[in-house]
Image 1: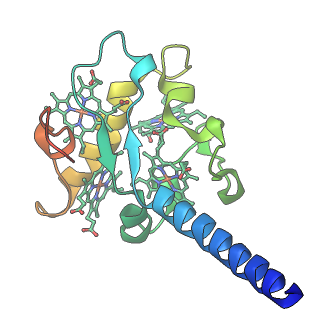
Image 2: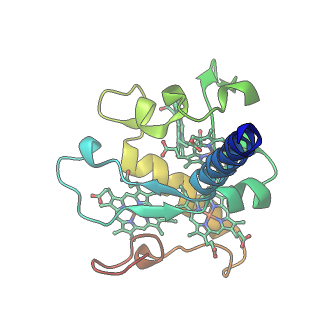
Length: 138
Ligand code: HEC
Ligand code: HEC
Ligand code: HEC
Ligand code: HEC
């Protein structure tokens, strides 16, 4: 009777850990970029961004993540933690931000800017490639 209870607890813990791990990796794989509150009225659908794929395909996190001080990118890998809001693009490129690029410009310059430098097949450059038509399930 006591053994059964222990076994049950042990398997419950294993199931729980498994659940947490799959959840974490699922969360990191794709980021859905949809900053509704930062736009007066959103015109396009949110963007499904395969973050994990980019972490592999782009050799340096700091090609996309930055914090400029005197023109130098001083961001540290330790800063790149989930739930660190200071690294999120709207923190600085939103309406109350301090950059000369607004939020749409910041994303478009970075995303499309890089894809245009790559082979044509690498990443989308056309609107619908990132903003699927309404009703589409992507
Ligand atoms: C490589 C990906 C990519 C491409 C290509 C792209 N966008 Fe975007 N766009 C984004 C991302 C990411 C955002 C940020 C969305 C957010 O903050 O919610 C954005 C934001 C926007 C916004 C502001 C938010 C809104 O919905 O009102 C508009 C408008 C927009 N894009 C229109 C376009 C148009 C028009 C094109 C084609 C000329 C285009 N985009 C091409 C990635 C892309
Ligand atoms: C191709 C560009 C790009 C590369 C390369 C990249 N990231 Fe990101 N990352 C983004 C964008 C865009 C977001 C979403 C930020 C937003 O919309 O505010 C993001 C979000 C994040 C977040 C917060 C969201 C989350 O997952 O909880 C973390 C943490 C992060 N990145 C870490 C990293 C690390 C570590 C690397 C390098 C191994 C890396 N990133 C490489 C573009 C990139
Ligand atoms: C801590 C504040 C901060 C965060 C967070 C931030 N930016 Fe920036 N960004 C800046 C500043 C400052 C500049 C320099 C231009 C200026 O003075 O406005 C800049 C410049 C840029 C540029 C111009 C090219 C370059 O790299 O200098 C792009 C594109 C850009 N940001 C996109 C993004 C995207 C996309 C994100 C989210 C992944 C992001 N930024 C997060 C502050 C920030
Ligand atoms: C520094 C360069 C760089 C930046 C910045 C970048 N990308 Fe990409 N993107 C790539 C490369 C390289 C690939 C091809 C990856 C692969 O096939 O493994 C790609 C592929 C993609 C794909 C297609 C993935 C697939 O499964 O075929 C999407 C969607 C995409 N990018 C969206 C975005 C969005 C949205 C942003 C901005 C938030 C962005 N990218 C910023 C380099 C970049």
